[in-house]
Image (cartoon, rainbow, N blue to C red):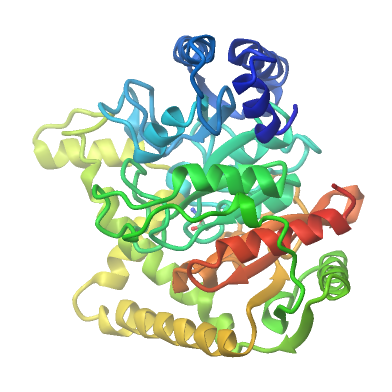
Amino acid sequence: MTTALSIARDVNAGERSASSVLAASLAIVAARNEELNVFLHVDYEGATAMAAAVDERVAQGLNAGPLAGVPIAIKDNMCQTGIPTTCSSRILDGWRPPYNATVIDRLIAAGAVPVGKTNLDEFAMGSSTETSAFGPTRNPLDPTRVPGGSSGGSAAAVAAGMTPLSLGSDTGGSIRQPAALCGVVGMKPTYGLVSRYGLIAFASSLDQIGPFAATVTDSALLLEVIAGHDPRDTTSLPEPSPVLVAHVNDGVAGKRIGLVRELVEGADEDVVNAVNSAAEALRAAGATIVELSIPELRLGLSAYYLIAPAEASSNLARYDGVRFGLRVNGDDVTAMMEATRTAGFGAEVKRRIMLGTYALSAGYFDAYYGQALKVRTLMIDAFRRAYDHVDLLLGATTPSVAFAFGAKSHDPMAMYLSDVFTIPTNLAGEAAISVPFATGEAGLPIGVQILGPGRSEAQLFAAARVLEIADGRP
Ligand code: GLN
């Protein structure tokens, strides 16, 4: 599969048709989806019509947009009119959204061709796609291992070459962690940069949509298309989409980059080695590397597992058998709701609802939820102090390469620890990118994470591009 950038260029130049690009993409889906379980739904009819519409524009001599004819996979927690949207949960059985998420509208306006909906951990709660009600996704690089999660299907779609681009959502690491495990580029943008309108809420103060791509430039291209103010999301930043692609090759000369002890602590040796070589590569490209410690980052996981479940317990209250999807009948309304929620939610979602409800309950609110919010403020202050001294931070994305199915699924704590390096960025509302750099155990990819303050996306892409080149992908 060629890059999105070259597909859009060729399609706009009339050198390739969007329909032929789509056919090539669907051929790979047909060859591998049964084995990998990447797509829960493929929209053959809609995608074919959208590709034809792009070809029609080109035939009329019009520019078909920056993503003309580029097939894209969509995580199945984003709404697309008339397309089954499940969040990988039985509770949404049969539900079809009556509207498009803003990101879908923007993709279509840019000429992209959404091909279908990808598998995820149920309601995006997990780090392996093993909590999906529709079975796990397999890692295309080693089908005995997980692709990461929760956006495992979207990461795998790009890694398997099914689509050059995909969208994921990142609440605590769900773009960056699967990107790392599948060997692709994953970016969690600044909170508010990409509209959440039409993204099914997990933890609203943390959720953010972002891009997956095989290259840094494609990742920047996709973010440019989906970012920018949206009046339908009250938390949307009041500014237009940033200029990103034009800065991808800006490099890191003169930048100060902090190598953070807490962002490699406890990681496997191959991962630590990769981060150290990444630091060397950035230094060789003209950056100054400063070793530093931000002890507050160690508190991230515990604060997250109070705040995220608290918000989830409230957001998921709407699935009551009345308005959406599944209904299991009972003798009265209460019995119906109980039966519906018992049958519709999987074990991890129930665990989060119980945790969150407990954390918010009278008598415990201050001790748990209130305390977690204070920790969140400490985290924000700690990052701010770090960014007084350095431009960007560097660490690992995840403690290990892709793990085997079942390795952590019976131990929630072990699974939660997969996101120990990614969660602080979400709590602070800032931006971070995972870029493949070097390989580890069994030749599997390692993701190196670069973090920056809010709105630092252009700098993050430029730094990631330096690592991409140093890793031999010009
Ligand atoms: N793995 C984390 C969790 O289970 C993060 C998930 C996400 O970012 N959606 O909550």
